[in-house]
Amino acid sequence: MAKTVSKSAPRLTAAAPLAIALAMLTIYIVWGTTYLAIRVVVDPDQGVAIPPFAMVSIRFAFAGLAMLALVAIFARDALRSLTRAQIRDQAIVGLALNVGGLGVTSFGEQTIPSGITALLIALLPIWVAVIGRVVYKDHIAPLSILGIAVGIIGVVIL
Image 1 (cartoon, rainbow, N blue to C red):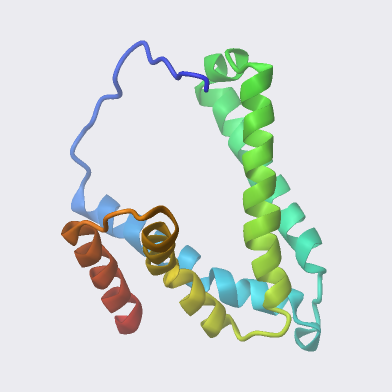
Image 2 (image 1 turned 120 degrees about the vertical axis):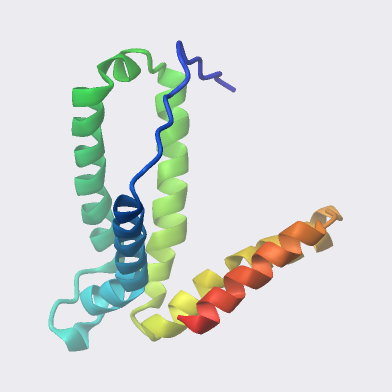
């Protein structure tokens, strides 16, 4: 596994409360509407009906190009230092997440309501904890249980 080396630690500064609130609002809106937007785009009854895997490909091609542009502008050295193995590994993870995760989710949203999809995705921490416990005999720490419970309460409130 490749090791990331940083020449200097990033400088942390106190963010203004308004900036934090705007960042949280942005996350709330973007993540909160993701599954509704997917449903609208892949549902033939909505008049758009882009095939699910094509929609995910287009979405992340644009996102990837935007990120590449930002890295080229602000962290050009990071691009130069990438090895073939790192690029290969990133491509594998990207394909797995986008095809296996969002691609399959988008495919399912052709027939499942977006609210159910969002709920199933929100329950993912529970599934990870349960599978880890059953398959790998992992211990679930009390703090992890508390974190999962608080997250589920947040989903219920939303």
